[in-house]
Image (cartoon, rainbow, N blue to C red; front, top):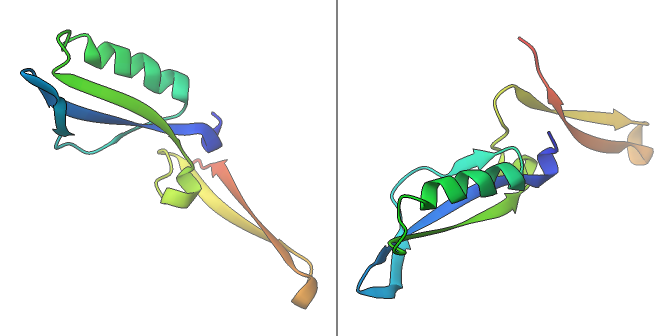
Length: 97
């Protein structure tokens, strides 16, 4: 899984009589491990709304920035060097309990 290209699905509910009037659907965002996985799920989800009552989009997210890592993953910070010469790198790794 490429965590840098994790994706989140955003859905909007639209008024059938005025399709330009849409509002966010009141539900927690769904996070996917890739854009491809999100696009497949989005197509599946929108099949139930063929008249445009619902629209959606998948967006790439960096889970290390949003602090919402997929289940089973952890952030590890590795520091190399000492003092002013130290350089830290952040990695997302699979964690087995």
